[in-house]
Every structure is written in C-alpha cells, then in structure tokens.
Length: 308
Image (cartoon, rainbow, N blue to C red; front, side, top):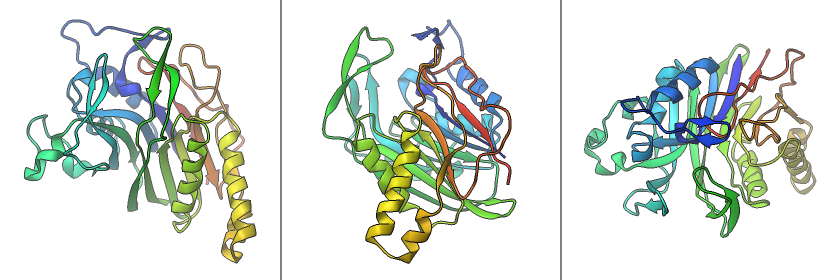
C-alpha cells in the first residue's frame, strides 16, 4: 500500500522557488491534476487546497484531486471560508460555518450553483483533504483553533519576510479496511507557530485514541524531522503515568517514521516539515522514500510503502 502526503500550495506552479505565470488560455487546474496523478497513492493527504477560489481558477480542487488520484472515497475539510485577496490576505466570510466537511456527494458543482439548495456550500474556502482507494468504515473531522499571534514568514510573490497571522486548521480521520482488518489514517496540517503545533498534535493523538489500530498520521506538521515522533511518544508516556492501564498499553506502542526525507523548499529541500508516521506498524526495509519535485507547490510530496 502506498501512502503519500503533499502540501500543494493551492496548485500554484513553481520553478526554482518562484511562481510561474499561467500562459494565455492554459487550464489552471491541469498542473495540479497532473502532479496528483503521478503520485499513484492508495491513501493520499493534501494540504492547502482551494475550493472555488479565484486565484486557482474557481475550481473545486478537492473534487479535481479525487478524480486525478482515482479515489473511491474522500473528504475535504474547510479550515476557513473566505477569499484570498492580493495585498490583503484572507477576507473571511462570517456567514459560513467554521468547519465544513464535503465529499463525493458535494462535488461536481460549478461555482455559483450550490448543491442541495444551501447557499453557504458554495462559499470559497481553503483546507485539507484525505483520499483513499480502500473501503472506508467511518469518517471523522474536527477544526483546530489558530494561534493567537503572528510570525514573519516567506510568502510566494512577496519579497523578504511577511508578518503572517496563523489560520484555523482542520484534521480528517478515516477508518479504512486493510488487508488484515481495519486501521486509522489521520490527515493533518498543523500550525506554523512553535509550541502551538505541538499542542495540536497531542490533542489529535487523544482524539483518535478510540479508533482502530494501527494508526497512520500524515500531513504537513510544520515540525522538523524527529520532533513529531518525540512529541507523540512523550505524550503517550505522560498519559500512562497520569492515567490508567489503557493509556499504559498505548504508551508501549511506539511511533515510527515511515519516511525520512527533506521536503522543503521544493527546489532545494533542506528540512522535513511533511511526515508519515505510524503506531502499530514498523517501517519496512525498502527503497528510500520518494520525494519527487513536481511542477506545483513550494513543498515536495512524501511517499512511503506500507507492507502489512
């Protein structure tokens, strides 16, 4: 089984770290569809997807990705609703809910033609998605509050550093049917604010504790290599000390990195912000994890093979 995670940066074409202007008459969705199709993943987590945003051609990128990934089921969770306005950042739409989950029943609808007669379903949004070719037993989603402060970051199309406020985040969990029974996959995109992302990761570990094992976590953690595993194992050990036998048993199930490779920036990877971790599965001895450079995003995708 191949699992993959990819922060797609709303499908923005990039070349050597710089955005590439779209040619006249070019299909704005084509580079993203081509990139996702090339991954050929059985389980795929995508971050920074647009839905009905003008900057990405007004398309439903989650529905587009589902077709490109040949997924049999999927869910998109909106982290925020609003429009991305050049020079202003996000202009939020207060009429829409903080978290909305969409799937195959909500796709294939053009901008301006909301399904089921609900006018808020067509509000432009930004979020994450989880796609699978495996049978799904159950879905679960939750929102994550933004950190109450901003940090200077490098932003495409802007010189130097830009003071960026944190955004609300989302997480999606799915109980999938594997070769040896059910297991749980959790797709995440954590805050870029140090400490706040650790808090989110520990909260999510507890959130899926009642779901079937093995557990697989994948996404953009905004934490460098080694830290997510240390946080998860440390949190489990602390719970075992302060709680009962169930937590003690969980603490003995250590977390493992299924893929270790730098993924950012895409044109010259120096650090690993994107991760695939598992509890109840050990990494297989095989070829090095793939991190191909694709024509979109400032991240590279991360892929791993899981041998049951």
